[in-house]
Length: 207
Image (cartoon, rainbow, N blue to C red; front, side):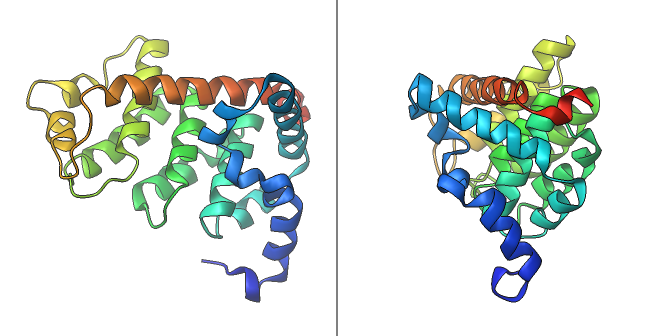
């Protein structure tokens, strides 16, 4: 992992793309609490930044810590940079740091293909078998359900079978609410709406 204190290039990118206005803190659930005008301004700036950052710079951010990875994943989602699909899948499956996994799930959900569903399935196959690990199982399954709805598939069905992996995971520890699945699906759906709205301000989508 590249470290800010010993990497001038990464430090410069963080100051330009990750830190302004506390951007990395607001990506995700923080968007839900924004007012209409404030949210619109934030998403407009996000779209502009997503159109300006280069693929190479995105690659550098994805070699950084969770703040950089989270922000890069949102830029990737907004700009529709599907060439990063496999890299995001690798990072999600590795789960080497906190907080960024949700952003990877959002990006894969916005890409919207069976290949993205495959990456989510691989993650769920590994981590729903680890109920002691409270990672990104919920966002990943929420994203997979969205893709199932869009693609007319049932990739999530086997996880949701009675006594299946999802039931085993929510039984914990730590115990999860039985209503959690609906919450996660709606949450990821709303984040994808925000990404799509920001994409309207992203020139990279128009190339």
